[in-house]
Length: 345
Image 1 (cartoon, one colour):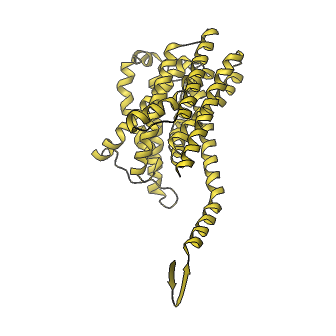
Image 2 (cartoon, one colour; image 1 turned 180 degrees about the horizontal axis):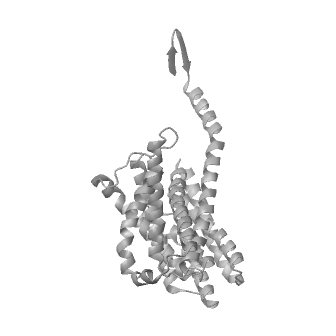
């Protein structure tokens, strides 16, 4: 029994009544929560697919002949930093309508907390863009499909979490789909070993990034704009030596930077790059790292269909089967984990 007194009136509720009221409040807020999740996931899909096609145009298009994927990635991070700084400036000019949390990006505590996450962010985006510069957009899905498998491996080695046999079976299905896709890409003569390796490394980095992002978001009260600001700022610094290590300096020096179309794509790519970092963190926040990875896999499947239509590619039945197998394995894994979490509750 719980009682509350307001003035001279005293009201008491039994435990069952309180639980019933809480249940009604939860059910009332449930549609709004579902709407929020659907909106965030939809935004992630639209922005993420757009980023892939923009980056493919920048990395390997005959229109923009600049073979410097890391430099282009750096410019996109730099544009994202400028957007954050503009946001911060506007928050001072219009404090009632625009808000930007207090930030000190070069404080020791901030650097020590966020630098590892930014390093994983650099690896995820960097390897993903390098993969995209070697493989077709339609195959990009297969090259990046092992994120769920890496999640299980990392959960075991880093968190000592065991995985059920059903979940492991789902991962075996994903791995089978991956190798079937690699085989079929090789049959049509468009397979790139280097691009596939970069895709696998990007999947590994993404798994680590999803795990660590959830932790650092709690440290900054889930301020996603702050995470985006720190990530892109530190990444802009971390990418600089990688540009030289990848041998892109000579290519950059010879490129014609007076092409207005190039700068339009850079600004659009940078803006969408900022938005993808924002909605990625938001999707992890409103769902979970696992759901984010499953959403990314399903999005990539839709992206494959769009890419084959956009680039007029003709694929074999087995090639499409490999995509279906990966999607089936990912969906089954999500369902298995959902049932396991329900049983724990």
